Image (spheres, helix red, strand yellow):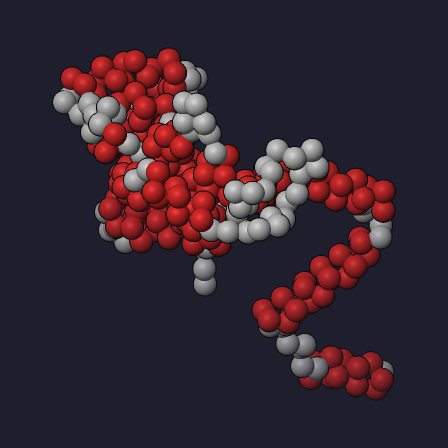
Length: 319
């Protein structure tokens, strides 16, 4: 009897164990995930040595297909006039490297004027897509209005038609607006791409709706929701459409060739055709001009690559 009383008293006087803190829970969960990952490295579903070799072999093949033409153009642009470009055994390393080919490109054509024309067109196209696609994508994803689904279907239908089908109607429209043979006429059709609108809509839809609902309860306007909630969470996708829009505007050849007649207004891709003469063609100059036109794309991608690879999931919820 006395033993039972003592045990009961001890049970009443016992202090309950404290609840684990959130930090301890996070530490334990991280340890369990690390342990399960270590067990899964060599467990079921892990790639074997043969599969790893195949993966890296495929990556090397893709790398060779994409990088080798670029390296060949770079090598050709650095070769001297006495080197044979079309030798039976090609050499990637120039035996007499020189930068004279780049200087001759500037002497043959007004390359810097053409580059400024291309930059002007690209700035309009990038700015139009960055602003217009963002506003349209936010409206389709976050605002409720009559005809939103019909408008989305119309956007999707424009992606079915190739650009060559509408190029005549685009030219007639530009000419009726008095923008033929102008750089604005070159940039205007590409100022807002329907694919970019859909990409921005997808990025805005990835943001949790609870964030918008909380902002609406706090009295935020649609503009405030766009600036303070939407834009910080779609920087990855915005950089993607910026890079794609710049590349499309900078590398476009057919549309500027149709719209422009004045040689002083040619873009760089159109102006580079003068390097290929009627009776003679110097592949070294053509390769040097190609590398000059490729350099701005490398600079833009290097500036935005951290946002590009971060993607639409970058910075969704913090705190």
